[in-house]
Image 1 (cartoon, helix red, strand yellow):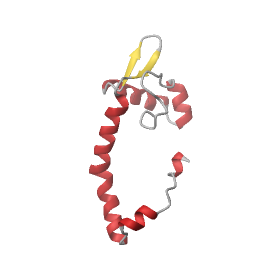
Image 2 (cartoon, helix red, strand yellow; image 1 turned 180 degrees about the vertical axis):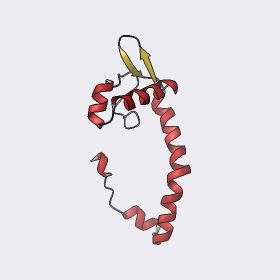
Image 3 (cartoon, rainbow, N blue to C red; image 1 turned 135 degrees about the vertical axis):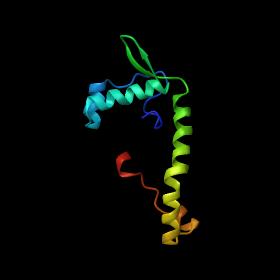
Amino acid sequence: MILDGTLKEGEALPSVRNAAARFRVNPLTVLRSYQQLVDERMVEKRRGLGMFISAGARAALLIEERRRFVETEWPHILASIQRLGLSADELLQAPKNKPAEQA
């Protein structure tokens, strides 16, 4: 949500209960995830108010996601492209549909 811009710097995260219900996961999973974001300084706790997106969080996440994509996902994608014999022109002309989870 931070990368997508749904949550912006300074905005509050959804409550643990709301996030758990929305994403259909255990509240403890959400709590651990939120704590990891705090540990990584992406989110700050404000006593009695909740958790808020830290300044620079989106930029830091973007750097990390790009690195992860290039190191772990791209090699598999490139191998598939080569295996299927797709050209750059074919890929650029492919329909630009959003992934199902974003629709």
